[in-house]
Length: 266
Image (cartoon, rainbow, N blue to C red; front, side, top):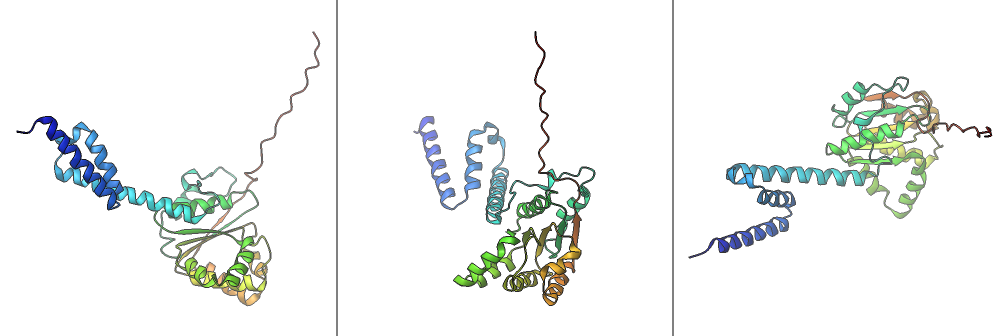
């Protein structure tokens, strides 16, 4: 006849084996959920089906969280902590919270729309672009951040080592591409042609975010070649959303007030 202590020992061994098997099957969410259930006295009153449903739900959430963390890491965002919930919509910034939230919650990614963000330096263009890309990652969409002024050198390296084709294919498959500081430096002929390839692969299929100090009406002249400029702008403007930020630079530090020396004598 087995004693209660022996039954408890057998139960503990069985649970430990189950936990190891769940982890071996990479069901870490369920393993964590089961460990919590074993320490919660109230679980004894819940049916097997309900406990199983809780474990499956825990696994789904665990996998979603892991995927989001992986997507954010691969995106290499300049501001990975930027979030649309924290957008600064104070008067004078030219930014409407409802318009941003409507865009973020809409189908702009699945429909392959462009988001064009312009404004003076320090207005928060890169931060807004990163916030939209970060939210896309939170919804399960892969994103990539790329500074346009550095593209020329990176493209030359990729052409030289033979990885350009593979990289181009990777960009074409990425749901959201953020091109930051568009129009800041001039383009050479190779970068100009490669940029057209990148934009052409995405037009109407994948979403592209562009931030620029340069007003959109000056983009054609910046590209430098009329034929390529026409092709790039035609693809970007087909289905696009536009935000024009205004106001003083958010990078400006508050002025410090110098204390006057105390000249009073006692």
